[in-house]
Length: 142
View 1: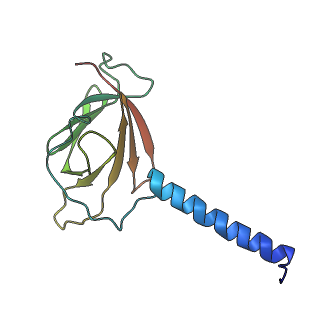
View 2: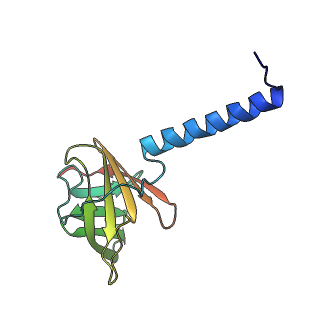
């Protein structure tokens, strides 16, 4: 039986470790899986609908940063007088769990999402593929 040199073993081990790390990252949603087929809809999943406040801020504070998700897009508030609206579509495999993707409406449409949104109970994480920014929100009570 032939023996491998230590450098060959290290190289093989590093390649296997990198492959495993990439596989885990894709499975956990840290890397966008652009190869998948998205089915876009105007309807926001029930778990996403409603008002969310930026982590560490209060829903009742008129100057807190908010995201309000509804059918056809979402609104945001950066301060009392600074509001915005993003019209777009959602894509998700299940209305009750998993990641929700959001694609902005454009004149020339693309199939890839602009945002990845993960909801777990009353916590939401919104990742922007364009900027690489991650924002965390908490659900506001009705």
